[in-house]
Length: 281
Image (tube, rainbow, N blue to C red; front, side, top):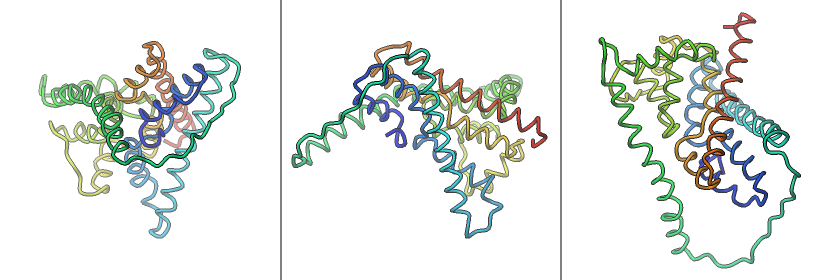
């Protein structure tokens, strides 16, 4: 379920009877890319890795690379789940039994009402409570200037040394931080920061976007590390609120935030360091 929305995946963990295993599933759910991260992954693959391939094979190569990224995320899910099960969440593995209820004719009206009010509006309500204030913060950072430089650019410059160790730059890392309300706004924030505009700009084609990124120092290593960090970083605001509700614990919400973030930092640092050590970047 996390492929559609990680928050929905967290709710889906209710069917796991074991509290220990339910927590493991909730903590590692974020390693599965949701709909908010797929556009970023697809765009980067298309711009930096598929453009050199002849037209008939571009779709095949793009599909294979995206599948590889997803499989890597699933592999990290198994790895981190294993590490958690032998360390902080030790316990005896439980069996899983799923009983199928008797078939009943669905009641269309009730299904629609429950889907809209119990699920859709509930999740959207959580998103709005964080997205609205965050949108105001992003606008203020982009439009308030000190010494002729926007606060957005100043913050990006402060983060740049650490981001460089991860194969990123300060703008990319800041975009992920400000994209906490929704993963969909990460790339628009990157564009806004690079173009030094106080509003989000939309490009007509990916070629224009690639030109902007390359002119601001993007290489194949930047693209790879951005995809890896997009795959493995903190859950979005809606997912965090859902974890808090399902786990009834701020501690496990913080752990669910910290585990994928630490994993993403370590993986990006290793990939960037090895590429630079081998002289590939």
